[in-house]
Length: 346
Image 1 (cartoon, rainbow, N blue to C red):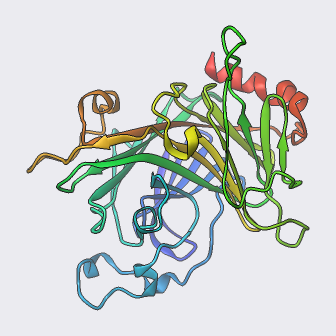
Image 2: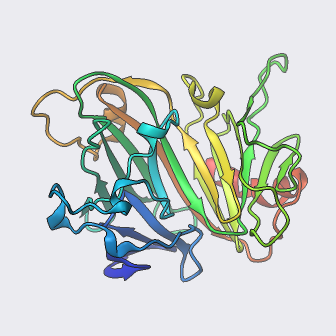
């Protein structure tokens, strides 16, 4: 386990973290964001977008008049892994996360806490924690907890929305849920957007899985596309350059009212693919005055006893599958990917 202060793709204040076979890069300059995730020294599976980062404010300029340039006044993709709040709307969801954040490294270097300042127009405060768990073997994982805290003065209805921007040539897998017990009721639903195109070679809809393949803009495709589903099987996945990325998520699909019940969503365009998890739509009560920072050491207690905080948990697994071809159909996933999923879940 090592933690190193570095610069990364124009961001001046970053930490490179090595946990077992995981290598992560987080930044203090914007966010909260995880900029890079890779298996050992392999290429990062997270995609990044170049920006003129010299216009970002430094910590000393936060709150100062006249120090906010265009990049500070609008939302920027940047890339990596981020936290949003759903349902998606232009004003609230796209609040710029362009200001420096607070980073704490605790528990002898096994946990990272990234806290954003309160969003001025929404009253929401975002926190992401990363913690290595599961020992040192191939089934070790990073528990990623995403918190939305209502620091305003009135209740807010929203859901946490965890988005991983994946690099080019990534293929995402959405399982179409476990079969219903008696076989008489529908087992899932599929959500479509205005710009969803089902007759698109990048989307493969099988009997058990949906696959979405990112394609470079130099290849023939038709722009942006998105699809989602209500998933009760507890996972989603992607494959990038022989690296299998698995997200283990909640199997409870109650209170999934955002996006017609989709809790796993995939967006793709000419440059990126996003593997997304959407949480439950609940009402966040205002944080009581003079409350201390939320105790992120006890996420389960927060989930059950703190009405002013929303929590969404993902568990990240990485596997190297060099000898496994990228799946093309349900049978490929059942043969080569599902055994790994079952090893995780069982």
